[in-house]
Length: 402
Image (tube, rainbow, N blue to C red; front, side):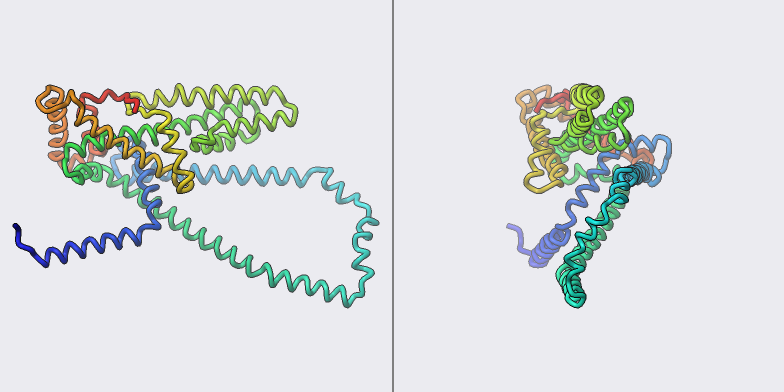
């Protein structure tokens, strides 16, 4: 029995208490950390692609972030410009202006007769009482709403800045993070296989899903432009956003547009939007684009994907669209890892087991012995290819249905 060391025990207790307190004071910031990690993971392929041409990690991290910023700003400007243009058109309607200009003055006088017949003193007193009650009842509420909006907007701006900064540093340090992640597991071999499976699943859940929705928005914008729908680029962006929502989908956009053209009796455009939207914005993205993008990756059953994206929204709100797939993907990766090491064909002594263990051992040694210089100079090689390589597990066929 080992001797009891009170110093080590106190040290352990202090570390645990400080760790718990750190988790507590960061609890309101969890979703910011999750969003930062997710954004870094989604745009990491773009970072690796840029590194092939620009041999600077900081510049390569700034390129996708800058592109996203410019896209958001330009889209916001176009939407605001279109909104203001439509408002100006409404104000320029001749019937509206003529309606105000040709109003019967007698009707206006008739509306004012009750006030005119009232004694001026009483009229002034009632008007003063009305404004006094208005100020007393509504001004504090308006001030409170303005304060809440300004506070919420300030917090949102700070959170966005933190997300951008964390995403930037996660991209820059991605190769180091990927190399050190297997060391967090008690068994490094299991950690390597688990992270490989997790990478495949998250690629199918997030990267493939995001790219499919993006291509759906692009196809939608082109379709709206061909059919002569006004503001086709804006509607394409709206289609992309709606496609990201698994329950809503792109059908909401082209369906409402088709309904609008039915109301204005443009039946040809309405029919074209409805039928071409079903083909190009629903069938092709789900049955052509998505399978091709998910080729040679860990395919996931559509029911699991739907539950992962939709169910958590009803429990924890909109953030469930992100937290749900992260949680389900983690559990699915753990299940597949256990299945790989517990499969009968990979029992100790079998040729499959020896092949799996040897390939994992070679990959682990390669990741451990990889020079630091290579990690710095080649993030594409160090960003996970040596960890998530299909050679780790020859039993993995890349097309699992679980």
